[in-house]
Amino acid sequence: TPVNPRSPANMNFLPSGSCFYFCALICGLAGVEASWWYMGSLGSRVMCDNVPGLVIRQRQLCRQQPRVMQAIGAGVQDWLSECRHQFRNHRWNCNATAREHNLFGRLLLRSSREVAFVYAISSAGVVHTLARACSQGQLDSCSCDPTKRGSSRDARGSFSWGGCSDHVEHAMRFSQLFVDAKEKTERDGRALMNLHNNRAGRKAVKRFMTLECKCHGVSGSCSVRTCWLAMADFRRTGEHLRKRYDGAVQVAVNQYGTGFTAAHTHFKRPSKNDLVYFEDSPDYCIRDQDSGSVGTGGRACNRTSRGVDGCEVMCCGRGYDTSRVSRTTKCECKFHWCCAVRCRDCHQQLDVHTCKGQT
Figure 1 (tube, rainbow, N blue to C red):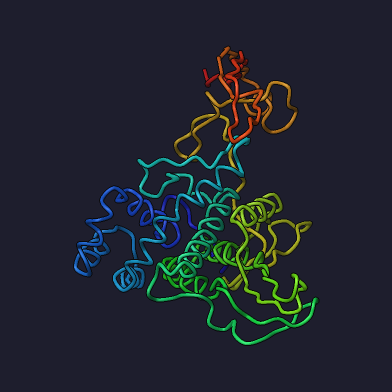
Figure 2 (figure 1 turned 30 degrees about the horizontal axis):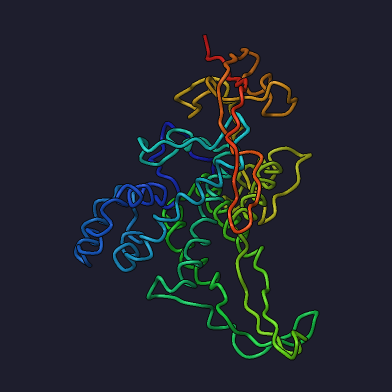
């Protein structure tokens, strides 16, 4: 019998690895960070035991690696900001609210392509955050990649490993242990979907590792090079996953319950790098608590654009309101010897267009 994705009616569901809630909780504790360190191992144990939704393996990791958990919590805003950037001009704009324990509310009860992106970008964010923390010496459990030693070659010739290579493999392993733990306790299609998208997110970070080198030699001849592997800016990962979102594959669980088949015969079979989803997305035009849509009422739109940020598309045909606002910017800046830049304050009157709410 094919394994079907979870339905909202019978789901006891918290986002993958409950990482969303845990990260949100730590972010909420940012103002009492000193208390976190002062609590020591006992405080970590008490906190981890009181985070709802964590499975046994996640609680173990939480107690064993409190500094890693803090790093994950501090990094949650990075991937949330990237998610919002990628969808800033769309009806769904990666809106999250601190009032929701899982950040995205009932949206995550669905199996849409937006949910696929959220899982992928959050998993990628954990990898990027942990690898960066390792390289910066913030964690006792890891540092630079120890395998990057001795000499090697690339298209330009030989070089010596030096500097500090980001230890992405370590970050991927820990991310898989913690983020995937919840899904591995389930045996349904939604768990398979989440695991697939989590993995696609992790792989996206590794995809953009680049070799950076420093030249040595007489007059910068670069006769000797010292190189290290570095992660690209997280924006590259976000842009890549956004493209994967655009090309996400709607799937069904195969008859063995172990993988996916394309939901439609003319769809391609998903690769390990693709994002996958089960359900069509709502239109996100109107506020709908059941679908997790907050609607587009009050959203700014571009009156002259014919794209997704245009008022016709963004406002779903409901029309828009126009208001005039004043804006002050620095202008006519000039450099004065030596050494100052002086600018004028320029005042502008701008028309701002916002979508009408539902009637």
